[in-house]
Length: 198
Length: 184
Image 1: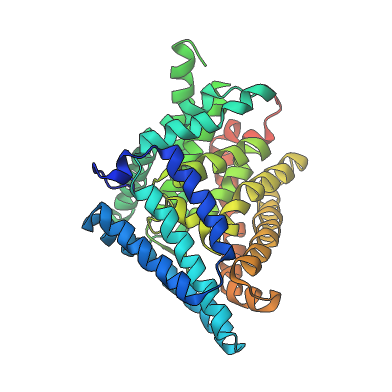
Image 2: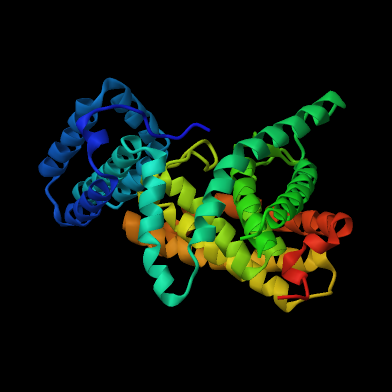
């Protein structure tokens, strides 16, 4: 399945995911103390340069990811303009864009496998309170493996609906999707138990 | 144990699959995305804990960088937007929905599922999402409510559909309604 991240060998890709996430967290807090419009614009420009320093593909994908945010940010901006808070409204909107772009930068430049490794490492302390973390790894793997299967199955069911002459996709399609998934789950659970269980 | 983990994992995958379905149109022509319906049904079918875990698993994979949210969105960025209150609220919504399902066993499932969904996935979810939006976007309560109100009718319809779907699943696979299973 396609992840959002873009493969590469740049400096950002070589950096440990843990360091990137730690930097992201610190910067995300720091950004709330920046109130100057000029400084925020400068930071945003810096982030674009950061994207560009990795590759043009990453810059393009980064801007593409920003697109759905435009409407959300636009609404907030308009609201603040109506209330005659032009400056503070613009600062809030810029901050949101910066936060979003920074977080996406980490996702774009990190391999899924590294992220999962870090995620399982973060979950380690759960062992201290008696939670078994090994099933979490198994469950993650299962979701990654099964999601494309379930998507393909859903599309297949939709196709058969269309083949029978239904033009519009009706909500009723959800029931057969659920039932096939439940049957799959029962079979997979049996198969795991047959191989020694968890 | 195996059954629980597999159900949690496959339902997490199901939320993703529902998000990537083309928009469903109701009779009246209102388009709805099926993803939040998936969250409701996780609670309805899996019950409180497993339902919340399935949603958490789904969100973890989104955060780790899979484009599983409706419209192919994903990554860490989506958790920084003002709408992220919905994402953070999803596991709690599924938990509440599942908890109510567990409390009202052996009653007509479509009513129980619909009402549980209304409480868990509308009232509880919006109680989390609206204040989050207010803080993130620095907006007042009324404006936030106005911005979110277009989604509420669709959400109510989804709750009703959740009841019908739960009823269908109960009729064809009665043992799979884990929230009603006696062995806990």
